[in-house]
Image 1 (cartoon, helix red, strand yellow):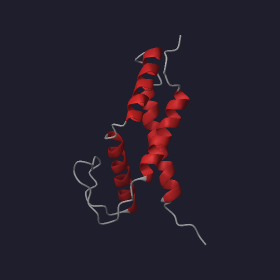
Image 2 (tube, one colour):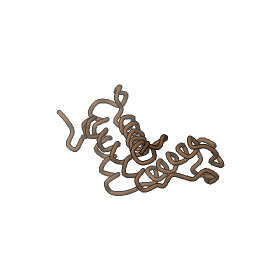
Image 3 (tube, helix red, strand yellow):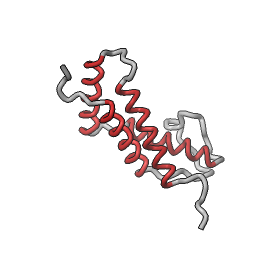
Length: 123
């Protein structure tokens, strides 16, 4: 019997994608020459020297914002994912949190492709 308020994998993926997309929309792409603070620079980028450094730094900034989000919506999401994991077992092949994290990254990268393409479009 399904637990009340348990989220389906589809709902988890959709929510994760939307969280990633929305968080990405609030963070500007860093400029070449900028330096990331040590608290956020998980990849050891330091000074941004290339376009790829800027993309990696941008993702670090977004993930830091998501990690620090303590909203009520986030608490409800956590409850739904935890209910699902409890329902299917702790060591199930498809962990709700793994699905959510993967979907967040997909949302961030989809936003980047649309709004910060690597190649400029020809006119």
